[in-house]
Length: 454
Image (cartoon, rainbow, N blue to C red; front, side, top):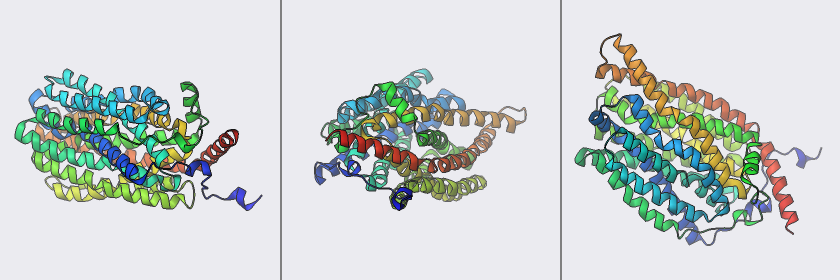
């Protein structure tokens, strides 16, 4: 067998490096708008978690009901994401983004008009329809604007919107809620999204892959079959379900945890939560840089960075939960490195999806990933809320459930997060064992398509 046949290092055929940006200025503008859109994506979905203690007190809700409010948008996000992902593969992606951002911004502002649990739940469902357009269309654009050797860093830059959006939401929403009431926090959030919807109309729209894509004209079911025929995609979907179960559980109850268990008021809890979420940007940058570096040594390198980061986060999470009551900053001191390590996932894994999926199918592939992932991730806040209520009743030992019991119950329920993080490590490691074969199959398909087009 030749040396070339057994090499494990990734190669970069012309079909992967052909995409050329329409100019550095336009590329910078496109990336800036995409980061802004993704920032408001996570800002808007996190408002509820930031102000939910005020909603709970006003409407007398249980933690289980808060969990359902926190995941309402996911229910439609998972379903409508599939047709929107396919639309991103066959239509102008900037139009998909502009329509999606405009819709979710209007409905986010409209959430401030909600009068009870049911009305707020319905409005949050609508937010999910708009937000489902973001990741498939934006990821497809980035895959065509940036070559394979820089892809993890580009995806990390796009995903910077996640920690920045969460941090800003905690800071702004809790401050506005304290001064003007929780409904005003939703009104404030709607304005930036509408401005970004207009900006999206001026984005660059590069040709998909720079060459003819062999899967671009396939029927939808054939696209789904092609994407799911890759073993790595199954592992990546499972990893997304586990990670987002944890991230949504943590995000939905983090402010409540600091307020109840450590006894601090809403603005201080918002600042600590913003710090914990915002520092995740370091993990995004580190993961993107290390992922691209590791990719040069082997196709599986990015996934090795992902599972190692997830493994290192487990002891940090356990130590944060071991901090005694009333020591919020000591707890945050362990959540900070945990956040950095958890965020290494996004740039590395999202770039891996681009590495194994041909350009004409990337929007649909991301939509399939998000659909399957969110079907399971929806249970993160719901299961955590239910477990918190159950543990609170257990702590009460048959007596009426008091605030102390609710604090202890939520603390007990949060231990589910490091347990599932251990399962995530196993799944990501399994994905690292299959990605090289899927990458080789993609190269063969793309080279064949390039040959047919000559």
